[in-house]
Length: 120
Length: 107
Image (cartoon, rainbow over the protein chains, first blue to last red):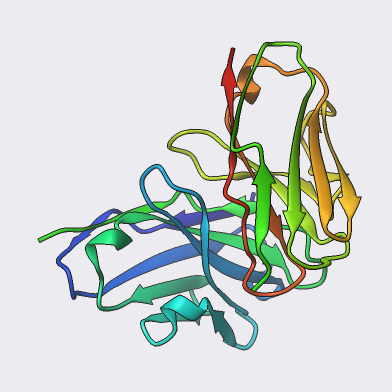
């Protein structure tokens, strides 16, 4: 069965970096894009970026350009999202979600979410 | 970027009611529109993709329609487990923007 399992909660100080992982299983890793989406407490969903696990190509939200890096490891079928220079207003739950590369049919599976708390 | 605007932002309804949520894109997105349901503390769940296709396992009381810039999610007979927040999202291009959400509450 398809599973996306994310790493555990993190507490970071302002200005620090965080790296969240998303391990995929139960499907062919390279045939689905992986997206990252975050949700601040009580707020809506914010798209952060996309990685193509097949070739590692990425596209990021304009507001995060220069601070976010998405990578993948095909040997472990894991994608990573690293966000640097964290601010307190970036306290949020961070999700990974997959989307088929051949038919843009939405994010059909999601990770369980990783709470990142940014606080001094 | 394509802006997605949902209305209403919240609504109160009773079990058995027919509920309609609308989503408008700032430019044409053909039929590349998806709907998600999110309950507190949980990841979003895909309900509808490419405007009107029902995701596997989703009850048939959920339906979607629209194309171009205007889309609708309809719940034909609201059930207790449907009280949640609903989001539209375009998959026409990146960034894959979401609407601001519609919270469906119990009347």
